[in-house]
Length: 394
Image 1 (cartoon, rainbow, N blue to C red):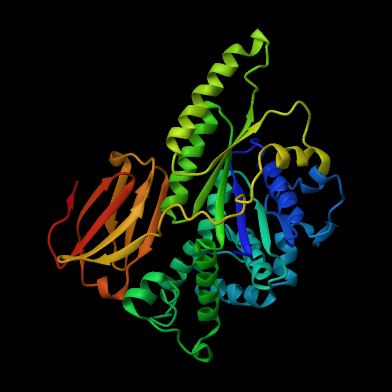
Image 2: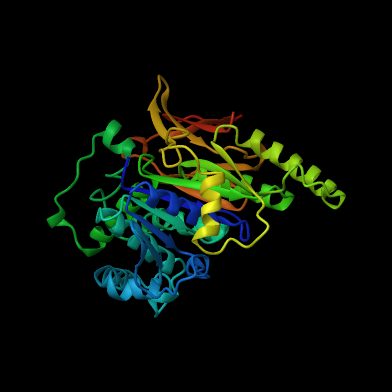
C-alpha cells in the first residue's frame, strides 16, 4: 500500500537514524515520493546527509525530502486552532495548574504527531519515514494521543458523542455511528482529532513500527521491553534491525570474545523475535555520513522488493462475544506473568506491567459486566467479562 508511515525507534546510539535514512534512499530510488522526518529534538538528518536544514521541508534529490520537525513552529503556524482548543481545555478546568500550555507534558510530541498525520493526509508523499527519539521518548510520543483522549473523556462532558466511534470494536461489534460534526463543540472536535490520530498510528495497513538494536546485553534487554510495551499499546511492530555486526572473518584475536558475545545476543534476538522479519546490518569501518555511505546499507541490507511491504504480524487487540459474556485479548509478548496487574475501573480496564500502565476504555455494552477472570499464556492476556462474579486470575 502507498501512503505509508514507517517509524524507526530504538535505544539511543544504536544507529536508527542511519537505518531510517537508508530506507528513505531506497524508497526514493523506487520512484516513490518520500519524506524522511526527525522527531528527535537532537536532530541529525542534516549531519547524515551533509546539508543545512531549517524549520521547513527541504528537497535534496528527486523524490526525497528531509524535515526536522520544530514542534514550537508547528504549534504556532500549523495548528493555531487546536492550540485554541487546548488552551481552552486547560483554562476551563485548570486541571494541570499550568498557565503556559507549552509546559503541559507531551504537548510538543503531540504536535509533532499531528504534523505527521497532516502530511500523510495531504497525500503528497507515498511514504513518510520517521526517525524517532530514543525508546522511552518514542513510547511517550506514541501513547500520548490515547492518554490525552482518555483524560479528556474523564474531565469533560463529552458523553457518548465522540467516545470510541473510530474504534474497530465499536464499529464492527457495537455499530456506533459517526455523529453530526456540526453538533460538536471545540473540545469534541479536538477529542475526535486525537482519536483519528490514534487510529492512524494503529492502522496496521498504514503505520509500521520498526526497532533498531545492537547485539549487546543492555540494548537487547531494552529492545525486549520496547517490543512488549509497543504491543501493550497495540502498535504494529513489523521489523527488527540488528546493527553493527562484526564480520566473522575479522582475523584478529582482539575481537574473539566480542564476536562470541555478539553471536550470543544475535541468537537471543532471533529466538525472541522469531515472528518478525529480521535484517542484519554489518559494522562499517567508517562513519555513515553522506549519501554514498548510507547507500552501503541499501546495497548490503535493503535488497529485494519486500522492504516496504506492510507486515501485519498480529491482529489488533479485540473483544469477542462468548457464551459467558465477552473476552478481551491483549498481546504483551515478553511480559512476566507475575509482573502483570489488572483491575477494572468504572469505565476502563487497567493493565500494568513493569512501570507502564494502560487504560483500555470499555465499550458501553460492557459497563454492566465485571472482569470474571484473566489468563496469560503465549504472550497474550485473555480477560474474561461476565455478569457479576468474583475475579479469577490464572
